[in-house]
Amino acid sequence: MYANDKEAADALVQKYRLLSEEIGKVIVGQKEVVKASVISIFANGHTLLIGVPGLAKTLLVNTISDVLGLQFSRIQFTPDLMPSDITGSEILDENRTFKFIKGPLFANIVLADEINRTPPKTQSALLEAMQEKSVTVSGQKHLLGRPFFVLATQNPIEQEGTYPLPEAQLDRFMFSVNLGYPTFEEEMSVVRNTTSNIQNKAGHILSADEILYFQELVRKVPVADNVMEYCVQLSSKTRPGTALATDLVNNYLSWGAGPRASQYLVLGAKAHALISGKYSPDIEDVKAIAQYVLAHRIVRNYKAEAEGYSVERIIKELL
Image (cartoon, rainbow, N blue to C red):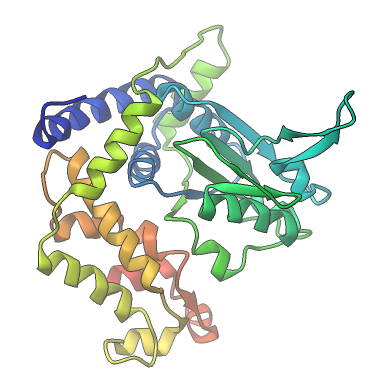
C-alpha cells in the first residue's frame, strides 16, 4: 500500500486531517471527542461516550462510519433486550436444517446506545464480542468482520432502572470520553443548520483495508524506554496501598487501574503521536490521552465523594 512505514505515517497525518474536516461538516465542535474516537479506532480499541441526551452522540458515530466507509449498525439497548437479539440466532429453514441469522453485531462499527439500560446478560454478550471479536451461538463460533469497533453511549443522569457496567466490564473499553455541552456559538451553529433545509453529508476518506493497515502501523511504532516506564508508573500510582501510590491515591481511591491501562496508555500514545506527525510517542502524547484511559478504571472512596474530589482532578494531580 505504501513504500515504507515512514511514508505510511506521513499519509496517516493527511488522512486524519481530511477525516477531521469531513466530520466537521456534520458535527459542530466536539473536536476532542472526534479525536479520541479516531485514536481508539487506529489503536484497535473501543470507546464509551458519556453525555446527556441531545449532544449528537448517535450522529457522531454515524458520521464516523460514513467517513471511514464502514458498515454501521445501531443497537438501542432496552431492559427487555436478549443476547440473541444482538448476536443473532439459529432458525429452522424450509429444508429442516438450522441456519444462523446474523444479528446487528455483525458490522464494522456498532453503536451500543444506552448500554446501561440492558441487563447484565445482554451486556456480557456484547462485551464478549468486543474482547474475542467473535460470538458463540449454539456452540458454534462465528467470527465478526474486521475492523470491529464498538462505540457505546451512556447517559449519566436518570439512573433509575439502569444496570451500571461493573468495573471489570468497563475495563474492556480503551477510552471513556465525557461529552460536554456546546459553547454558545457552537449551539447557535447547530440550531441554524438543523432547523433549515441545509443537508451536510460527510464523504468517504478511508477504506476498511486502510484502517487495518494503519492499525498494524500503530503496533509497529517504536516506544522509548522512558515513555514505557512513564505509562506503567502512571498506572501503578493509581493503586492504593502499593509502593508507588501517592498520599492522594491512598486517601481518595479505593481501587486503581490494572495492567490493561498501561497497555492502552502505550497504544493510545502511539496513535496520538502518529496523527500528530511524530514517528515515536513522548510523554506529552501519554498525557494527552491519559484522562480517557484512566477515568473509568479508578474508583473513588466515600472520602473523595464527600470532599468533592472528582476523578478528573485526581488524574490531573497524578499527571
